[in-house]
Amino acid sequence: MLDKTKRGWWKDAVFYQIYPKSFQDSDGDGLGDIPGIVRRLDYLEKLGIDGIWLSPVYASPQADNGYDISDYRAVWPPFGTMADMETLIAEAKKRGISIIMDLVLNHTSDEHFWFREALKGRDNPCHDYYIWRDGAPDTPPNDLRATFGGPAWEYVPELGQWYFHQFAVKQPDLNWENPAVRRELYDMIRFWVDKGVEGFRLDVIDNIGKEPDRKITARGPRLHEYVRELSREAFREPGLVTVGEAWSADVEEARQYSDPGGSELSMVFQFEHTFTDCVPGGEKWDLAPLDLPRLKRCVERWQRGLHGRGWNSLFWDNHDLPRVVSRWGDEGVYRVRSAKMLAAALHGLQGTPYIYQGEELGMTNIRLPIEGYEDIETRNFYGERLARGYAEADVMASVYARSRDNARTPMQWSRAENAGFTDGTPWFAVNPNYTEINAEAALADPDSVFYFYQRLIALRKRCPVFRDGDFTLLDPEHERVFAYVRRTADEQLLVVCNFSGEAVDWAPPAEFGRAELLLSNCGAPGHGLRPYEAYMLYRGAVG
Image (cartoon, rainbow, N blue to C red; front, top):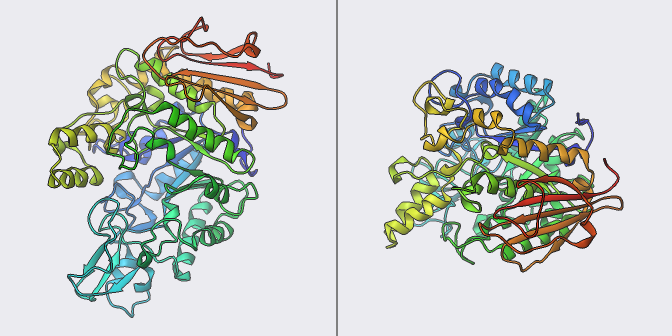
């Protein structure tokens, strides 16, 4: 078991993201909840993970599925009670599993006490907790747009002012220039640390230094000043894990966030690789085939750029992204094999891997009529594109491929009704393929995607090269094969992945001719690569 009192323990760890609303319902109301997570801890212990990244469970009106927090120190009642949360922390710890809470420091709900007080008048102490600008009701301060669509400013007639919201109207941005705001947030973080939480994933942390008057929403001039103060004041224990979600980060900035000196954060979530199947210069909805050489160059830039100088998070899926087996694998005949291939490609890299719930089963995207989607971003996109004259079929193709709701379908536990997720009516549609793809079937099949992930997790703890090795990309322009070598002074690891549904003529470097086969999704490697084949070869001192 990892010693979690030491700084850097998370470099050997693998984390698992839970989206509570869709993980396990315990009381039949159709919503996942905290007691449901407790019920499934033995499953996660069997998988071998070291920590749970828990998406928000705070009190919230759920305008953005919990990322609009109305009380940082309370649990949303449909998820359970504070006592349930304390039970989860304690029961997870018994199994060697840390709880890493999702934390939104950029904005609150408009139903938070602070914002309700702010609306009472300009002289209220909480008014300056948010970003306000004077102006006429028909003239916003500027033309900034919100991420979820529409203007980024909302007018309040009673005050004669506009407030800034980078996301939904019901998510007013906090004013980080106000030291009272920062102190409130630091005290709240210590509240959760005292309860036994062992880390935090910091939602859109790159936005806290915003300067909307200058149209700067990310990477503001005071960003790293704020992050350093946050680390110093709130994250004092050396073993606390801090993960910054930073959509705007490049390699150089990621080094600042995750410098080994520890002045800021443990690691970053960066997203450059998630745009390698988008039209260059377009939005995430503008679809293009995966450009594998582009993806490989991106991975190489981050692997080499952070080696020894920072630390990265490794992920294909999360609550905001479509299912990777649908995106870059094969939902059909090669679903299992391609899910394993994608796992091998990711987990062989340097960084801390994150598994999103159901990824270890090879869960897939879902297709619904537009009325069936819950996600505010998806609904706004659909309306805006139709208003701009896009064909509905093209808009829906983008929704099917990229909607955040693809990741939010209920976890598929069994062949029972509603996939074993709930005895009631599920809050969101269950993917109809749950009768084939479910945890019960995976646990009964020694060759399942689940056990492949289990072996990958174990390998990271067995072979230090996964943590420490440098990175050499092979055949960078090959359009189907992603292969790379990780090396330390004592070990060498070769990872080979066929990203296509066709056989490929490809041979490993001669130096791996007598290497140990660590892992394969097709049995022993032969001549060339079979469709979606992946394997790892190892040379070194670890037996």
